[in-house]
Image 1 (cartoon, rainbow, N blue to C red):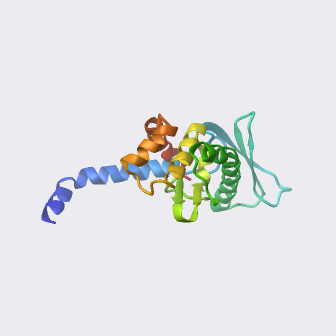
Image 2: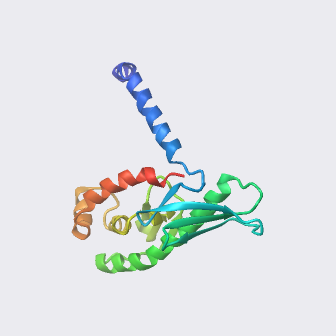
Image 3: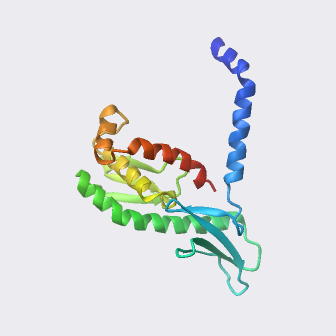
Length: 198
């Protein structure tokens, strides 16, 4: 225990500096939902465009694919940021469900792993999880922000847990069988984590 305390004491300035940097990044990446900000959809940058529409009573969020914009229509009265967050998350959930509708059956057939139920939630800490005994899969709504190949890797990763409920060598060998470049994609996913904060 003494060695740990000594190490902490010796490195406290460096630890504090790293903590401050992490805090800065988090604050900088949080969305304020104003025109000019960017949002990641399918691994591409979309420009956020906010406009006040006095006749509207509710917040509306929609994607304009051809223009690569996310349009946020707001009522005249002030709206708390959390309310906009909820609407954006709702849009991401719908888009993630659409993507899963196409890719999950494809990968289930290809790997031979079947599932009983699928849930999409607003998870920030991980992209997916699996409960093999229940045949249950859960995915983050933020998959909608990732590139298609990254989404495929997350899907296959979770399906492989039906055989190995761990991250053993055997698990990664199985994952590599279906996604040969999974290591490169994992690195990209690590970088992407900062893009999906709000």
